[in-house]
Image (cartoon, rainbow, N blue to C red; front, side, top):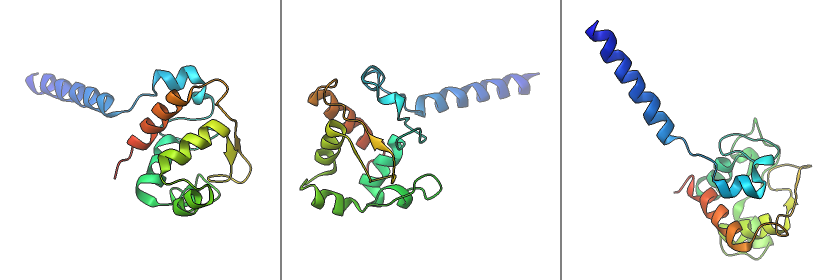
Length: 136
């Protein structure tokens, strides 16, 4: 009986730790409409935010370079930044979220511009959150 009780406590501990390690979608993302197309851990319409963070922090390229089973195009981060005359991934992603666009992850799916309904300060907060998911 004692071993069953100890096992139950250990299992409960793993559940609590696992829940604490999972990252929740920020309320700002929910109220800004980001969750219509994005999830932190998996692709919805747009790329998973963790994959975006991996691309810009670790892999150095988007799309198929991050996960070839999920995405269908690849762009080198250095080329994206050069093409759009941006010095940092943060600056580029703020612009991308503000103006929308397509091509960094998919060949057909376009991101709608969010600038009319989301402030630049809030966009920066969300981009910082995304990039912070997979720091170098």
